[in-house]
Amino acid sequence: MMNDQNKKVAIVTGGGSGIGFAIAEKFANANIQTIIVGRDEKKLQSAKEKAGPNCFIMQCDLSNLTEIPVLIENVVAGFGRIDILVNNAGINMKKDFTEVTDADFQSILTTNLCSVFAISREVVKQMLIQGGGNIINISSMAAQYGLPKVIAYSATKTAIDGMTRAMATELSPKGIRVNAIAPGFIKTDMTAKALDSDPERKSKVFSRTPMGYMGEPADIGDAALFLASDAAKYITGIVLPVDGGNSIGF
Ligand code: NDP
Image 1: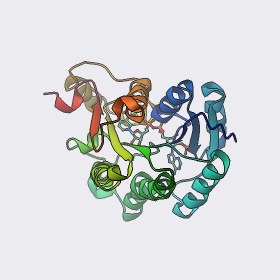
Image 2: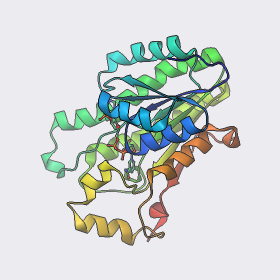
Image 3: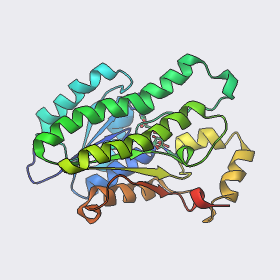
Image 4: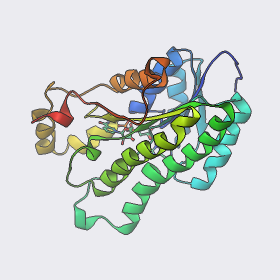
C-alpha cells in the first residue's frame, strides 16, 4: 500500500487480464496509483509485475456483493482517496436462449451488473467526501444491437448503458463524471472463447467492421485514460464506441 498525495488513485476491476489489464497498464504508466481487482491472485500478481510500481493488487470475488464495502474501505484506508473507478470485470456465456437456466442468468447478472452497482455505490460515497471523481463502465456491442446466444450478457450490458446515464445525471452536479466505453471486438480470452469455435460468427464480425480487423486491448486503455483525464472534463453520460466502426457497419 502507498499513500502518495501527489498521485491519483484508480481502481480497475478485472485488471489482471485482457482489457482491464491494458487500462491498468496505461493508468500506471501515466503515474496513477492503480489497484487491480480480480479473483485469481496469481493472475493479479503477474499483471502487477508487468504494470510496474504504480500497480497494486486486491483479491476479491465481486460476485460476493457483501465483500465489496470492505474492499473499498481497505482501498481508502491504504490510499486515502479514490479518483477513478473502472468497472471492467465481466463474464460472458454463450448458450442457446432456451438452454439458459435461471441460475446461469442470475450469475451473469450478479457479476456484470449487481457488482457494478454495489462497488459504484461504495466508491461514490468516498468521491462525494472528496468532492469529485470519475467512473468508467465497460459496456459492449451487445448493448448497441441484437446478438444471438448471449441473452444474459446482453441484458447486463444494456443495463450498464442505462445506469451510466442515470448515474451521470445524478452525480455530475456533484463533480463525478460517469461514462461508458463500448468496445467492439477486441483480442482477449473472452473473444477467443466466443469466436474461435464459431467461424460463422467470426466472419460476421469482420464483415460488419469497416476497419476490417479486431481491436487491441490497448485501444480501450487509451480511451479510458482519455475519459479519466481533464481532456474529457466536459464529457459525462456518454457511451463511447471503440470498435473500428462495428456499431455503424452495414
Ligand atoms: P477477460 O476474461 O480477459 O477479463 C475479465 C476479467 O474480469 C478477468 O481479469 C477476471 O479476473 C475478472 N472477473 C471476472 N469475474 C470476476 C469476479 N466475480 N470478481 C472479480 N473479477 C472478476 O475479458 P475481457 O478483457 O475481454 O473483458 C473485459 C470487459 O470488457 C468485460 O466487461 C467484457 O464484457 C467487456 N467487453 C469485452 C469485449 C472484447 O471484445 N473482449 C467486447 C465488449 C466488451 P479473475 O478471473 O481473476 O476473476
